[in-house]
Structure formats: C-alpha cells, structure tokens
View (cartoon, rainbow, N blue to C red):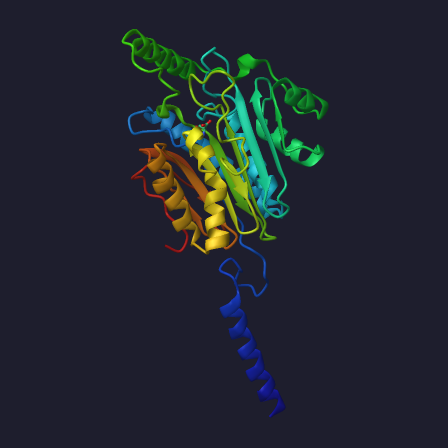
Length: 351
Ligand code: ASP
C-alpha cells in the first residue's frame, strides 16, 4: 500500500514539474536551459542588391557567426561569450557594416560604434567614434568589465583599448571598395540636391547594415550586443543608436534586443529598452512588443529598420519593415538557420 501511495505521489510530482517548467527547460528532468543564439546583419539589404556570390558569402558568414557563438553556449559559456564570439566574426566579415566593411563618413573615414549589455547584472559597455579598433565589440566588453565606465569615445576609447591589449589596426583595414562606391553615390545625390536648392540629404536609409547578437545561456541569462559603422555619409561626429544602451542594445533578466535601422529614430524611441519594458512592465508577449515598437512606433515617427528580440523563455522575434534583414538563429539542434529577404523562408522552433 505504502509503495503504491509513493508511486502515485511520484507521478503527481512529475506531472506538476512538467506543467510548471518553463518552456526552455529540457526533457531530461534537469532544469538546464536550452541555449539559443539570434543574430542580425542589418536591415539595409534589398532584393537585387547582391550578386549570387555575395549572397552566398553573406549566408556563409551568418552561419559561421551562429556556429561560433553557439559553440560557446554548448560548452557552458556565458551569453556574453556567445554574443562576443558571434559579433567578432560578423565584424571580420566584409559583407556587413561593422568592423571591416563598415560604411564611410562624409569625410571618407570608417567610424565605428558598439555596445554590449549583460542581462543578468545589468552591466553595460559602449564605445563610439572608433577608427582603429579591429573588433569594437571586444572594446565594449572591456569597458564593461575592466573600467568603472559605461561609454567611451574616440581617441580616449582607443587609448583604453591599447592599454587593455585589444588589437588596433591601420584605419585602411576597414576599407572596402563597395562601401567607398556607396559613399560616392551618396555624395553625388547630396550635390544634386544642393544644386537644385533642395534640403540637405541626410544619411540615406538605404545604407543600414549594423550587426547584432542576442544569447540565452544554460544559466538562463541573456546578453545583447551591437556593432556598426553607422550610416553612409554621416558627419559632424554623428553617433547613432547602436552604441547607446536602451536605444540600439538592451538586455535584462527577461528580454534582450539589438536594433538596426535609422538610428535617430531608435534613439528617440529608446527602441530596445521600450520593447523590453513592454514585456516586463505591461506583460506583452515579446514578439508583440517587438513588432509594435519596430513596425508601428518607429514608422509613425518617420523611421524604419528592424531588430532582433529574445526572451528568457527562448522565444525570439525578427521584426523589420525594410525589404530585407540579414538574420539567423541557432538552437538545440545546432543547425544554423539564416534568411536575408522578406520572403525568405526561416524555420522557427516548434512552429
Ligand atoms: N542603426 C545604425 C545607425 O543608425 C545603422 C544601421 O543599423 O545600420 O548608426
């Protein structure tokens, strides 16, 4: 009798665990979280922009970044490690507007911005106006972990990078011909507008390309990071949303976001924080909150772009309102899934 009673209690207990376990708990009976990594390579890509070869290279780079970041998560690494590893690869890939391959400023320079945030601790690091730091995301992380500050800019930031042993390169390292030609086109369009007495053309929305990554690690911790060259033809030391905590990057205990788009609007909407605040304070489902901010709030203001968002329950979303956004994710099966244009199929977990 006692044994039967015990068996019944065990069955009830097992049922209870199955019901109250969060979606990310695995089936092994442990409470290990299933890690997830989500990335973007910018919302500035449209059908017809890329040759088949360029498209294949971009897809391969996205997959490599997903694999590199996910390897960290599988090895028990932190969400921060995964975000750092994935973004480092995307910065090295010339296909994206971050690190090598960054867009040019009005003055013909590559000027890089970046940020990272640890959802578990709320710590953050950011840097803007960099010309010599090979992998800006490494500097953002060092600022977060090795300094009492959150944000550094320009020469001071590079001095700190040097002191931390973070690799510096000749500014020519970042130059790619494709980005140079984009600047020439933007300058010509600007000159035409001035000649016909039209208002000064601001950095065009056709030149987004920021990279970003979000990770959920086996501890259930989230992290977010973003890295960019900003917008083609930017001037006057313009800084966009990417290095601004709460605008282009946010992570807390329940939600992480990295944005890509017309940075001025993302700053004014505090876009990344706004998405997570809706989840945390208003209890909105993360995909709904992300869609509302990216596809309603920002367009109503006159901006456009996209974002990636990831919850501590492993649910993620890729809202964007441009013709394409380089994007991808990798989860428990270890298979990278990537897409570029709006209609590209992108399998989602359990859907
Ligand atoms: N958000 C970036 C900026 O405004 C641009 C981008 O996403 O490519 O600097």
